[in-house]
Image 1 (cartoon, rainbow, N blue to C red):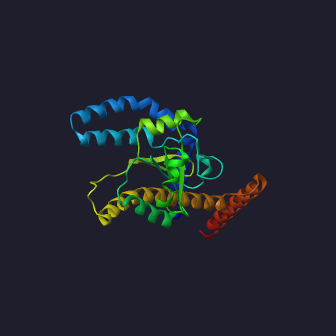
Image 2 (cartoon, helix red, strand yellow):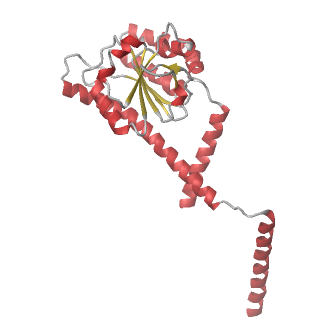
Image 3 (tube, helix red, strand yellow):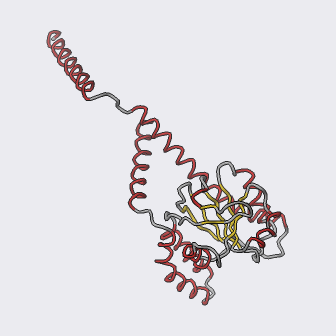
Length: 268
């Protein structure tokens, strides 16, 4: 049973690996191909005050066209030090895009801080502000040190193509969940609530929402760990004999079968 499980995992792994090698579609390409059509439908849904259909269309865009694509590589800018390429983050990424003028729910940042405290060893938590350096400085004290705070000034950034897709096509604030290879697992909107919510209620609302993204990334990590373990076990059990050694063993097996057959005839 264990061998069958290992074989099944490896089959899934290699088939997925082959598919990814064949079609690693960049996020920017996928969203460029589909965003206009979806936005037209979403705008009509909002015009008809059909919020449920608008949410359905957004989820459909993500599920059918954006999940499974690979985030383009681009520079982000911390407050100190050199620019950082997205691919330089080695862990799975929980990316939130924001702007300084967006007003988060009162419990949103505390909830994010707590999750980053618990899971920063496994996940890179990155909050990207579409602002200049001075605007980012005003936000630093709100986030703990386990969250990577970075910014992009659209006016001066050289990666304008992907920036346009991230900032303007889907809007913000937005959450992107990526594995270690920068494959997008999901994209979700930040939940909102009425400004009158208490800190406790706001914290619970945001913690529950943000936790779903963390769970997605952890589950993907666990699956990859199982695959790697199965692959390692398969390598340990693989046939390392030379052709000559294999031929000798096969010849010996034939000899034993013939010997047993002769002995059985004598007994009868």
